[in-house]
Each structure stands twice: as C-alpha cells, then as structure tokens.
Amino acid sequence: MKARISGLGHALGEQETHNHYFVDLGLETSDEWITERTGIKSRYIASEETSTSDLATKAAQHCIQNASIDKSNIDLIIVATSTPDYLSFPSTACLVQEKLKLGPIGAFDLSAACSGFSFALSTARSFIESNMYKNILVIGADCLSKITNFEDRGTCILFADGAGAALVTQTVEGETGGIIDSSLHSDGSKAELLMIPKGGSKYPLNTSITDEKSHYITMDGKGVFKSAISIVIPAIKSMLNKHNLNINDLSYLVCHQANKRILDKIANSIGLDKDKLVVNVTKYGNTSAATIPIALSELNEEKKLQKGDLILLAGFGAGFTWGLNLIEWS
Ligand SMILES: CC(C)(COP(=O)(O)OP(=O)(O)OC[C@H]1O[C@@H](n2cnc3c(N)ncnc32)[C@H](O)[C@@H]1OP(=O)(O)O)[C@@H](O)C(=O)NCCC(=O)NCCS
Image (cartoon, rainbow, N blue to C red; front, side):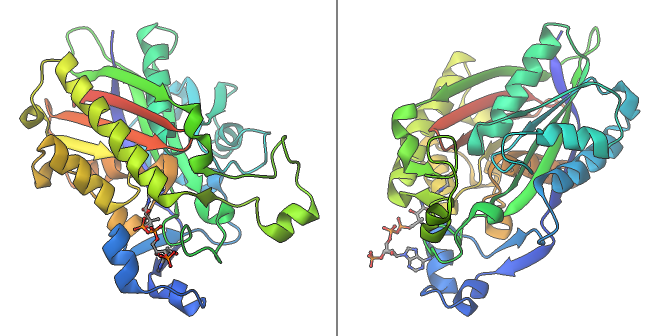
C-alpha cells in the first residue's frame, strides 16, 4: 500500500502587497533592491482578523472540493505551522477540525518551520503505509506577517501569509504511483541562523521583550542563504542517486520558496531545465510551511500535473531543517 496525493487546495492572505509598500512605511529600501536580491515583487498579507487557522481552513475546503471526497472519510488532520493561532495550545489543527465540522478524528500541529509540509507529508505517508489511516488532510499554513518586525528591512520584505492543503490517500490494489520516498533531516547547531529569540519558555514574554522586539523573527540572511544551498543540493542529488534517477527524469522540482536566487542556484548546480523549476516566490513571497503545497495546488489548477510525472519536493528552513519527498503523480 502506498500514499498518494488525491486533492490540493490553497489560500492566501487578503492584501496583495507590492515592494513599494515598504518604501511607504519609511524603510530604506527599494523595489529594485528587493527584486534583485530576492526576486520578490509582491506577497499577500493577512488582515488583522485573519489567523493561520482561517487560511488553513480555506485551503482545506478548496482541497476537499478538489479531491471530491466526502469529508466524513477524513481520518486525521496534520497542520504544519510555526504561527499557530494560540501560543502552544489549543493546536491550530483542532481549530481547523472545528471549522470544517469534522467528527472527533485526531488533529495535531507539527513544527518544522519552512520544512513543515515536507515533514507532515512524510508523517502522513507513514500512517497510510502502516494501514492506520486511509485519508489524511495535510496542511502547511503560516501567517509570518504576524511574527515579523516591519521595522527590520532585512526580514519584512521576505515573509508573507498563506496556506496549502493536500489530501493524502491510500492507493488501491493495482494503482501505480504515489509518494515513492521521503527523507527528513535537521541540524540544531544552526538554530540561531533563523529564530524568534524570546517569548518562548526560555525567555517568557514580558514588556522589555516586546519593547526590544525580540519576539519577532531574527535572521542571519547570508548564513541562511549559504546553509540552504549547501544542504539542499546534496540532499537532492542523494535522493536521485538512491533511485537511479537522472535530473532529466524529473518533471518538476518544487523547492521551498524563500528567495529566487536560492532556487536559481539550486537549479543551475544540479543542471535542471528552467521550465522544470517551480517558482512562485516572485508573487507570494515566503509563506513558510505553505509554499510547497501552494505551488503544487497551482500546478494542479493549471493542469500541469500528468499521471506518471516525477516530482521532487524539497523543503528547508529554520532549525535548521530540510526534508524531501519524491512523488510519482497518479
Ligand atoms: C535577506 C537577503 C535578501 C539579504 O541579501 P544579501 O545580499 O545577503 O544582503 P546582506 O544581508 O549582505 O546585506 C547587504 C546590505 O543590504 C542591506 N539590506 C538588507 N535588507 C535590505 C533591504 N530590504 N533593502 C535595502 N538594503 C537592504 C543590509 O543592511 C546591508 O547593508 P550594509 O552593507 O550597509 O550593512 C538574503 O541574504 C537572503 O535572501 N537570505 C536568505 C533568507 C531566507 O531565505 N530566509 C528564509 C529561509 S526559510
């Protein structure tokens, strides 16, 4: 028995925001700088009232419709997020369960930052291959704008809000394709490259923390850039080698959308055709755990996914974490 993706959906923050927004905020930046260094031209920011569970629920509804499944057949919900509605509990997955009006099935959050969807998809695959569940809703959802310091030009131009959902279903006898392999990795020695320094159990929130704004994202941009490239390229090569695949065998490489320069460097270094590299960071920015399922959902909507296509998903992000899933589309 294998696990396959049988439906996809996505949702974005309400407000389309162009680069000049940051200039208007009074930051010393420009559309030219942001475009040249990141490739990003716009991103979608959630309204004040919208939280991660709202976007996750919208993406899930879109996914359920796309999969044409009776929602009572869903056995489990996994939400990968770093921006839960509430600090610690209740989980965002429980809120999504209630908003979707699903029965008392299991629902939990998973935290692996921007690699979250890769980790959640692998987790769902294991539940399905072990025959514990048949239909799992896997959602990557984040409202990074809610944890971003809009006075920090080094981070606020990158991050945005969105959600992507995939229904992961057990294959039936004789059915080919599905999730072929997964590999998950972490390196906690790189934890400080990208973090929210304070406001957690080590430094519980107080007014001096909010005054110094250390409850927002801090990032060593260059360090993250270098780590992402040096980690993801060998991981992709190793996955391809393990399955005796050539780069030309891939139909698409769907990497975490952090920066167009990172995507281009990865593609150049492995010799991937430009048209097989999926890029939407230019219009959506970095929506963390949501980037990969949003990109897949868009490919699906554009009818670009064909039965038999080999697709490699590669997530990477804070932790440092990185995770890959090799899929034969079915
Ligand atoms: C953040 C990032 C775009 C910065 O680009 P960079 O070329 O590395 O730029 P640097 O950090 O070296 O900064 C160069 C200069 O630009 C400035 N700068 C930073 N952000 C700027 C902005 N938005 N506009 C204008 N100038 C900016 C810096 O302050 C620095 O100025 P200085 O030389 O006077 O000190 C880039 O490092 C990056 O994308 N890293 C990866 C981040 C990422 O993907 N994070 C998520 C991973 S999941």
